[in-house]
Length: 469
Image 1 (cartoon, one colour):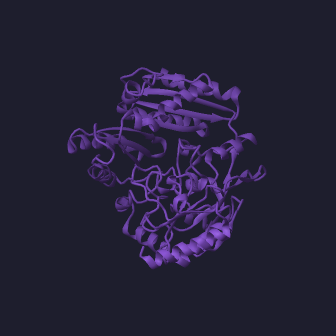
Image 2: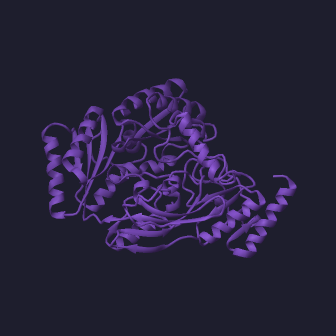
């Protein structure tokens, strides 16, 4: 930013600080280090300022100030993203929603909750639970991530197989557009076909088309029973058979279907110190969870379903949870991946979407290609297989994050994703880290339309420019 523009920017921000208050606009040495990056491993950049409004009007004031000075700006929530979607570049302004928190309303009759965009996912979950209701979105970062960020990336998580992605959990929203307009559409109606459903422009757009400030969320009946089983099966054909049995035998009770390949299981049991609830040495491992509304009948039904599978020889081994603590223990086996930084050291994570039937082929081919194409490279595989989402991490032991051959890994992983007709991002977004590979999952016509929408809403390209497209 040249000197004249820098001076104009500082003056505009100083005026904004006088209007919103010193606590709302942090400048110079007061800019917190945390606002320089999300959870990705990329180098942080200190923003020119951090604006912390308390309402949509404050967000609009910040947007207008940035427009007046020609400053680029990026919306920020909990900063738990993994693709630099909420990360600033040098000279940008960060508009943080960290003070826009709180539950505005819970409406039992419409089964909705209206919340401010900076509210943490865990706060929303607990508020629903206290009112005897249930908000099903669940991520490992639940205590840190903000609901506005969940919407902007269309977060997935553990229960997509039953409740869908975040997009399916939203009825209405309020958003500040790049020209400063506040568009309030806090719809509570499930059936509302009055023109375009504009909320879908902003859900999943990673803060490039507008800044979400308030949200109307769908709530569900609170589960009264939760059953879980860890199953061992001989091969991927048995995984697919088990998934079919779970869908047909458990029906709407089925809430999660998580699969772990042997390399993952070996890492968590031998290097992470996890005590295996089932025997080792099997082909694959599956965590099945079911949630119901009748504790007296749900648990016996689940156990009978599982016993039938064992009797028919469809499972090599299985352990059934007998308590809440055991269920949490089963999930700890799957969630230990959040500690891979300590267990494996520096590594590169991937989040891809694939047809369920082709996942094992991808795993075999990808693992072999990484090992043969990059000396010393290892990888492990796991994911939400019931909804077509595979995760993997790859690494070369002994190398730092910056030394990891990420470009070569990306070419192998995303090249195979493209060949198999998958998606380079199932639930984490594109940001800047996957922007190069967007064409592996979207056609030229699709990307052209994305650019048309961006140009129409943000012709000056000041809102989070260079992200996604």
